[in-house]
Image 1 (spheres, rainbow, N blue to C red):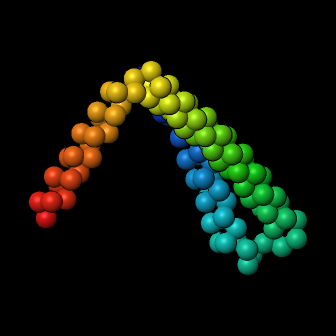
Image 2 (image 1 turned 30 degrees about the horizontal axis):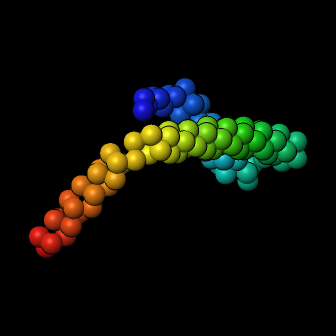
Length: 105
């Protein structure tokens, strides 16, 4: 079963979104006392926009992880169905290894 390398662009994009969110939030906290009316509303709107982008990016990352997990499950099920005796042997070996490790304590 070949593994796909994680998409660094998605991680970078997610990190950038959260850095922007943190930056906007810090800016709001620092300037909240000195801002009045339109300036405060403009900053709040920027933060709402940043939150929306971060939520969208998180949703996309969640969907991608779900799809990768489902693909891994499907591949595992396919392997178990085509190689049941090998799977049973591997499971028995792992169980025996855990038994040995536990009994040494």
